[in-house]
Length: 61
Image (cartoon, rainbow, N blue to C red; front, side, top):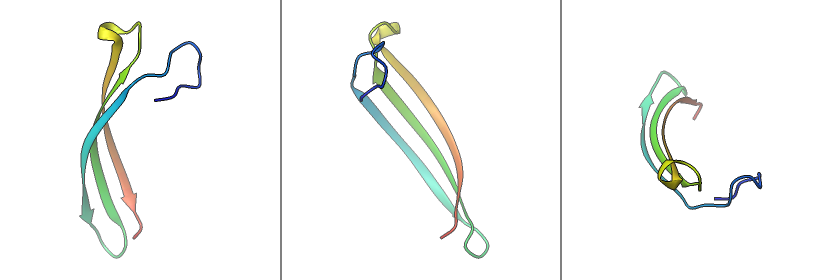
């Protein structure tokens, strides 16, 4: 993964996740996602940054 800052070096990136789309009325659909990310950054604990993200969105198709 490339970073725009010279403060942190470029590192390895890993991400995995899953999501589901619920059918709604007419063309509106709801999307729910859960993702796990790991990026190698020297200086962080264990030289990596781990994070989990939750997403909620809508689709018009």
